[in-house]
Image 1 (cartoon, rainbow, N blue to C red):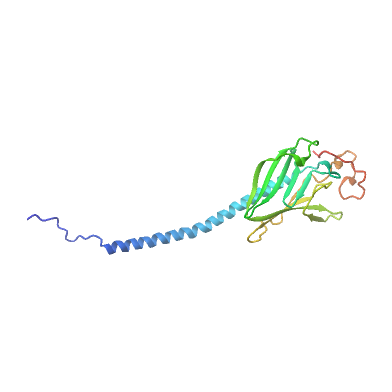
Image 2 (cartoon, rainbow, N blue to C red):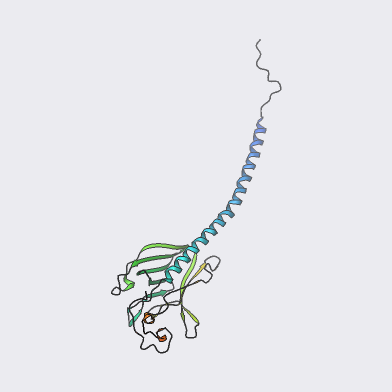
Amino acid sequence: MIRGPDNAGKRGFTLMEIIAALAVASVIILATAALLHNLAVPFARGTSRVNNGERLALAAERLAADIGSARFIVQSAAGGTSSTFVGQARKVLFINDASQVVSLDIEVTDDATQIVRRRGPWPGLRTPFQSVALRDQVVLLAGSFEASFSFARTAKNGALTWVNSWTNEQTLPRLVKLSLRDRASGTDLFGGAAFAIRAEAPMACALQDAAADCLPGNDDDSDRPKQSASRQ
């Protein structure tokens, strides 16, 4: 009689051993997944905070450059003349030192807010700056926050007074502030930062025979020359 191979001393895995091994492997896999999740969530939050911080810094840099470049130009307006700078709680419109009309708009939807920059070439004094078609739209910031602009004028004693609107004014505001608050926490994301306008003096101060009374806020300004151009 032919005998098969001798299997003495050899044995395979039983069904119970396989099930136990799979159970142990499952526990290890679940524990590893939980560990990775616990590490990934703080990392993602940290990365998000860094990215948001970078976006805020870039937006602040762009706003500072734009608002700082506003030119002092006078155009005809309803009831007389005014500077080519219009400021509202959700919109700022002005002409920059590259002869471009720039708008900074706060656009709000139900669940998000955007700060959008647009610009367009200004043909010159014959064209009302508010009628210039704007393009080159760029979203500077977007997210769940509340935003508004305010504008500072300088009193005779040197104190700053903040207002929510700047229209039909003969001068530029001294500062422009963007209030930016997180909707959920109320945190001030910009820390009350204000942006300075470099062209603070009217064109009359650039004339060769200009005196100190060319500056806004002086009592005797009745003889101040009216200029329809900007300081270069």
